[in-house]
Amino acid sequence: MSTPRALLDLSHRLADPAADLVILGEGNTSADLGDGSFAVKASGVPLGAVTADSFVRMGTDEVMAVVDDRALDPGDQAAVAARLAGAGEAGAATPSIETMLHALGIALCGAAYVGHTHPTAVNALLCSDRAGELVAGHLFPDQVVVCGRHALFVPYAEPGLALGRAVRDGLRNHLDAHGTPPKLIYLGNHGIVALGASAEEVHQVTAMSVKAARVLAGVLAVGRPAYLSAASADALDARPDEHHRRRVLAGHGTEPHTAPRQTGTPA
Image 1: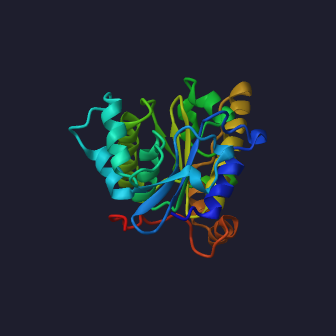
Image 2: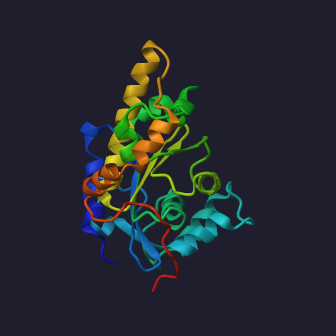
């Protein structure tokens, strides 16, 4: 497997201590390889120390089958781990326990890159009784432009299969309600998942989510949030100039992250 250079760069940027997104072994990243498989960080490798050999190639449909297998008990960690190992290349390193989050982002949301982190500023709210305020509205225009019109909040679930199924159900409901996938998923008492058509977009969604959390924390310290109206947020989301800015920011010439990709069995 040839690990995309952009995936390595994204991993190192998300692990920058100055960003306060992860410490120790926290966080994981992935990239769709375009052939029905994706590369995801191996378990136990610090995000800032990854090399091209730190990623495992996984079959997208095969990992989705693990999530959807009703006979599989989320509490049976050994069985879940064995199924995940069977969804990857034979003899490869152990994939992250959160591999299912990455398969969901690629299969259901059409993401080309996925980044999962535990930002301190965001978790300060996700670990509080005000976590819902993160998805109750937008506080400033660039939050709409970068993080999208509708983020998804998923209440706490045990990392692994239980979380994978909770996110799957949340994504399906989100797609039914809004017709488009989120760019940002908030995981209660846990962290965030940023989805993008490029590694740069994932980094920007992550960074903007941190800014939004810091602004919200400041707002809650002095009063109540004065969110943009739904009409204003809709207008920002639809403006042609903002669509152009999204494309420029994300570093490519097509509208980022809009339609699910087709998945199949890896070659």
